[in-house]
Image 1 (spheres, rainbow, N blue to C red):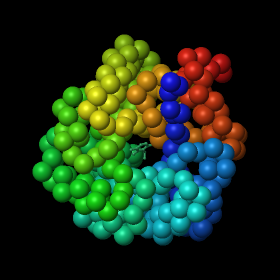
Image 2: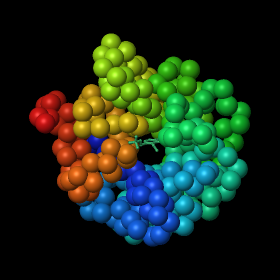
Image 3: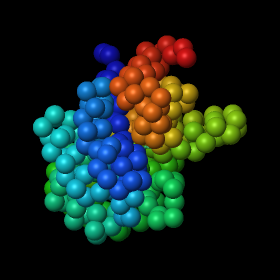
Length: 257
Ligand code: PXP
């Protein structure tokens, strides 16, 4: 039997980053999401941060309408707070990915401590799951966190690939290999516990292949690099090239640059 297709979720937050730099309406993240869907995105991801530094409440509502009308899953990333819980319960996105959030960070650093916050997270996850959203937990690929995730109503874990990406950027090859092994073992353990496995953060044309090759991977969520590359190539070629590299890795063929 052939492997299911590896889905590409395009994170469109940084359309809003550019828009917000001038305070107007351009570029509209919803138009960006529409263009990403036309270019082959299998899903749209957006992170409503507590400080609304990029995506805003109104963007999210319009994204939900677009994704519903295009029959494309919307993956809402959010911190596990009462404010975000209320918004997600009203919005009912296809998926909710719980992420850790600190105001001073530039982007999501590290995974959610599901093991340490188990008692606080379990009821919040249950409410969202009972409301119809598919729950995903953004975690580090270690046994403690994976086993804790499996004890909740979450159906998905997304493994944080940021440390792998950084190690490669810093030419720390051995460290990168160790992290990659953990990401691979994490995928196998999570799947054996009944969780669907996603990966995301810091993925680029250069590092995506090793992650796409992990047999348990079902979805990759990629934002910053694609939007940055779109400045040079346009959004459609940037997404198509990422897709090509993912598919080539999946077929066991290394993409040539
Ligand atoms: N997955 C999660 C859970 C994230 O928080 C982010 C960043 O918002 C991404 C994927 C995308 O990361 P990047 O923008 O580095 O591709």
